[in-house]
Length: 359
Image (cartoon, rainbow, N blue to C red; front, side, top):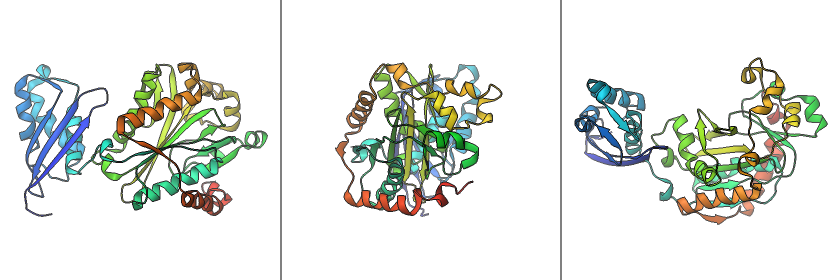
């Protein structure tokens, strides 16, 4: 750290709220000045002038909880008179952290959208690792890709137990291809055409200053917007579930590289065969409590029933929403990427050692 004056700028659009902007000055160790602005509402007006002093003196390495605590303490004297509309002290802390982390916005990057060809699920899972590494190395621009597959598969999380998640008789009966992905999270039963799966490959600067939970909803703002266009009022149920008033739609998972480059992917059910799913997945007593396996059928509410649209049309809306919001262009995989993915299937994702690494 130096003692030189440094200036930082950050912006954060609160989900379902207002834009909050932070202009922060530091001496390299502590915050020496800060200006908070935006289109939010705050009463009484005097409270606004207590925001900056509360943050001055904080370490440049202070986490969100510390910054939020300083703000809450400064505003505590207003009691019930305090009204913050469209933002909160947690959002101010987030935007300050994003400023100090030199955070970027979606439109600061040249995004590519890939509407992929039909590929085996093993290859789709391998492509997630390949493209993550390519973006981290700077050989590929930030990318959103949509999966297409025709096999019957179950994709399990990196740390899930094979025997605890799967029913061997169901796997054998339906010839299910079981693939372990590189991200954590839960198992997804994925027949060709019954789900919508997408993967995003994200530069570190885009999620700078966001904690783990915040990054999920931040990265999927475009998904919620696309679903709203389709008539679905979707929202995030912490940490990683995409839900609506009609029930759970899907779930997201992430994998972060050491440099911060991020894989964020999600699977949303379109027209799932719930009877078949519960024959293949154990679902887990901790998730369904004491209600029995049959209740698992109610855990996922397919997009088909909520939109009335064909799967392809939903993906069209999603891709176009992303491209329009963020200025993305359409592209494809390179031959080298597909070749490397196939090598990873042979060396890793298609092997018993990887699939059963957590027995």
